[in-house]
Length: 258
Image (tube, rainbow, N blue to C red; front, side, top):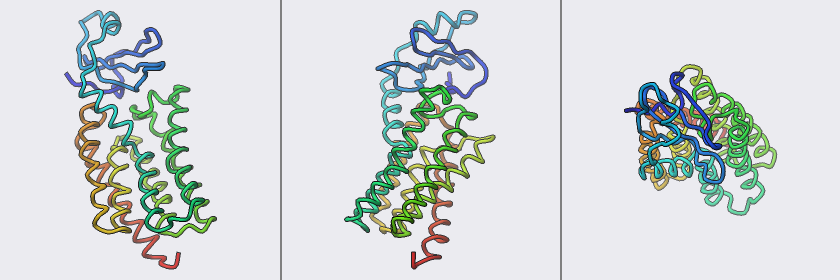
């Protein structure tokens, strides 16, 4: 039985001892809170007809594969991979620019992560993955603002365009995903791999193609958690490649002096 991972309007959701449990279309999911909270977890079981509440009080154990998928989703998320991309660019192009690197990590990684965690804690988001369609817009708006502000600061501290414009590309890509999320849910996790992988390959050459390999565990994890359909993963990955390549051509190749 499929779990719709919180994006199904049908079913129910209750809180038991600080943790949330629910069901949609006959499947169970859980969102533990407190010290052991790990986000929204599909439990994979079905609830008895007419007695959903009792089922949520004794959920089935979470499979090891679901725990692994959850761990991959937490570690290989877009802000973390953005930090890796900027670290690689500064190491290759500006190894002594500690100020620029600090700015890049602050606006591309730490601000988006703190934003999402803060929204999840305040329950504006259902969880740190913003799994519901209508909740994604809040995370996207905040992230877009962070990326654009980060680009402006990088320009102000005279960071080369091959680095600074990646921050702007993150802002543009996020804005496009915000527009699409009115009705659809392309994968941000997939785009978080292929976007920076495309930029790194264009700047650093073929060795950076290895970054694309991270799409394999990320795609498996998002499918295992049923957070996305295969189509959403493909579209998220392909859209990030196309948008990032286009912006590299416009911003970097079109302004070689920057």
